[in-house]
Image 1 (cartoon, rainbow, N blue to C red):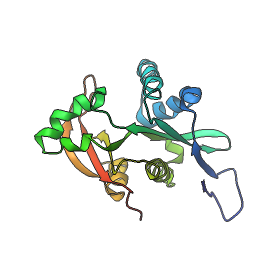
Image 2 (image 1 turned 135 degrees about the horizontal axis):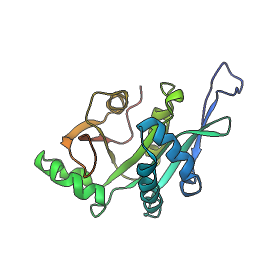
Image 3 (image 1 turned 90 degrees about the vertical axis):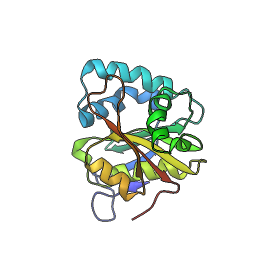
Length: 188
């Protein structure tokens, strides 16, 4: 899939979205995440191990967005499993809101990041809709920092709604919201 930069001819600004061998490109992906999310080297080192472990889970897959051969965005996810760490943390919050059934038959968006220089070009939208289009599950869930942000606005525009708010992850400095949407995601 291409997101053209200008007119109908390929330009250096063209964004190409396609499958990403995330274990082979984990350092490039985490460099994007570090800039987009403001992570330091210690946090990147921890997340590197998490990403590599996640990519061994059944059904885990990733997509990348490249411009001029450089990774500028990525998304990865997998069918949700209640035994995974993320699910065990969010389950009590979802249960208290009557939404813990969302942990079953859902495709979880584990990470979605676009380099700040490439944001507001539809890349995040294309990444998340493309990865969920091939999901066998009837719905998708994710977590996002619980503030009004462009990311939360994007998720809402795709049909995600808040399932639980003020979710506290160990060692995370800010609370998160868990959001869910039926698949396929709503298009503009």
